[in-house]
Image (cartoon, rainbow, N blue to C red; front, side):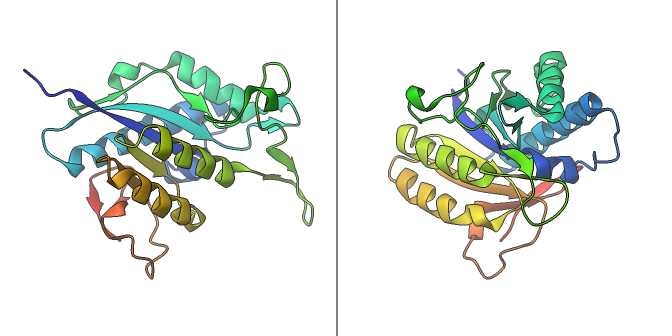
Length: 222
């Protein structure tokens, strides 16, 4: 009888994945989103396959970005929603032991905040995550890293025997990862950082950081 699937929640910094997938040059936003979704899902699948031979994983994705100008969805949010609706989730992972689920969540609605903190229609916890920059031209993301951190710690508390994977480049997410790892360790859960970069060499990341190529194999490295 095959082993049961292990639950994985992947918290994905969407902006860094567009760059990792080399999708910035794709002008059509829905095609850019589809490329990013597919390549990121496959990178996650390769990383999980490399972790432990024979273990089967079922992965839920949550995507974090500056999804809203005020209450209005950005073009990137609409493109990501369309790409998810059009995706064939059965083929997103190339590994037989990794299943990518189609219940993709967005980080503007937090996992563990009170419903009375929701605003707008449809309601979210975090409007205004894409706004005009205060000290330079253009727009900037707000509350994205802290939303990832909040959901990461929520998962560590409520689902401590699962695997949580932060898919991001920013070492600002290392402190909540260390805390999540400590909270989950007694229940057999694991916390990982999947990234393409090499930052944080002075940190004791050891087997927490999965260093990989979005176009090829993934190996464990600090």
